[in-house]
Image (cartoon, rainbow, N blue to C red):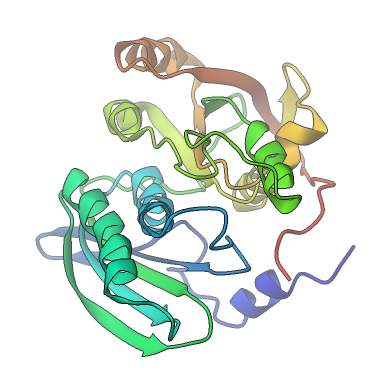
Length: 278
């Protein structure tokens, strides 16, 4: 298997705060969740694929996704932007519009950051979120039911089209992830563990396996496209058998599709997808 530089580098900084979608810091007046994500030109997108407003919007949404699966509500954002020299006032207005509209939708205040000049557009965002009851990747138990939201597998197909200069629908989840915040906050008290599907279902199942020392008995075995499609930003989560009907009713209440995929069993799980990083 190819050497995973991401995992190796992160392991150099091991501590109790690292290993989830965000780091939970306890304060006297509650728990704060700190998360950070990057969105770089020619790594995550090309300027020919999306408008600048769409790029800024997606950069915000992929960060907000991390907060949601921690059962945290984003409060503040710090933006670090590397701006190419050819960007004019109109381009910068379009970029800022995406950040501002998305921040307003989720009641987030953009409180600062940094800007530098660079040959390519690079965006790094830090979110500061608040939670009373954080949900972690660990917490799954033998016998829990594994669900994921929405439909997965189509984003990878859209990405392959973009790579050969074929257009995709502007409503594609690759362009604008469809976050399930209302459902997840509503169902959170019944959820034992969760992770957002950013690198692909197979990658996230393996992370849950590692965090909980578990494996999965699939109810319906997912296809290779489902396992390996990244950039989905759906939610993978576990629920006890006694709470699954409650979660299904909440999903119906919020018009959110959830899919029962597996039962948690003893063992380990490893995916066979190609690495997305490096």
